[in-house]
Length: 157
Image: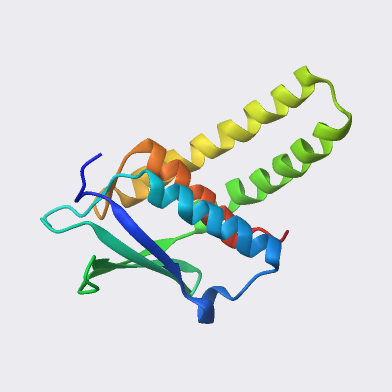
């Protein structure tokens, strides 16, 4: 991972995303930590970096306000969440099944549910890579972590 082609900070806009319950806030913090810990994030045609991102929700679009490490604005990208709506809904159902299964199901049943969950996660990551391709260069693993954060923003606890 390049030291400049990465995110070093992510903040959330409380005005548009709101604060969540303690469990929701924990999930968001973990998702941000995982994303920051290891990612590839570069802006085509921009030699700067590393970057900070401030996320907001405006008119059902996730807004990435991207800044240089010193806070100087670089660009704001608006990402429609419509292509992810079905996956977020399905992912929530599979996660509920997974956590319920941990208590009562056999290991093979749990593994089957987990494979479905990973499949949805991968599908979402592919969509994010495609939708951001001309705006932000991210690798597949970064896209997976980004989806985790997007899901955490929607998670009801």
